[in-house]
Image (cartoon, rainbow, N blue to C red; front, side):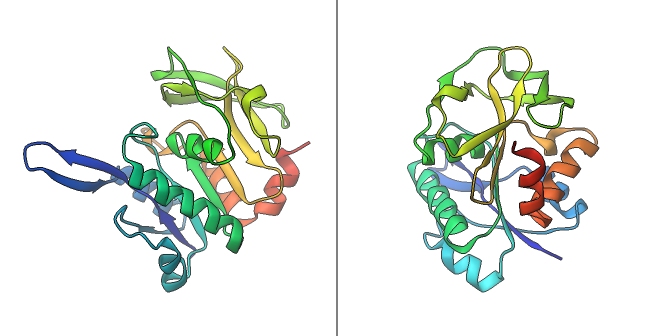
Length: 210
């Protein structure tokens, strides 16, 4: 069973003056049902490379929750995980905020957007000529012309053209702006994307990049 390292959000309890790691348990359930062994990493563990080594990690997931810049510690640690993914050739998926973190890592811009929170919309494949309806919970969008040249869009929002998913041209990095774990039942569309990417990244890239 492949081991997947999953990052977490940070929650600050004002009353108790205490910081907590926080993760939607549906994300753990999603990856477990897909046949992976999920392992969470604390934001306060500042040497994620040790996690990769000690647990023999096969994949990395950067999760959603809160905007970039709210908790600098999380931003820095997730940037480290991206660097380690590239250095050690470990597949990495960014979900919603995680995709935005990847975009920022490669000097891309985020643009404030309305109408993308607690809604659903159609995404169109730029390569496979198929559509899917996905959920949406984000306040920022990624525009094609503001992306790094090595980030290749593979799905866009049919309504406004914003980038909903991208692949890195040469590295094992995938971003998706929607939340597979928030569906009442895990969709086959999401199952195929996640499993194909994590199990055979090279083949996934061949199918999805023109």
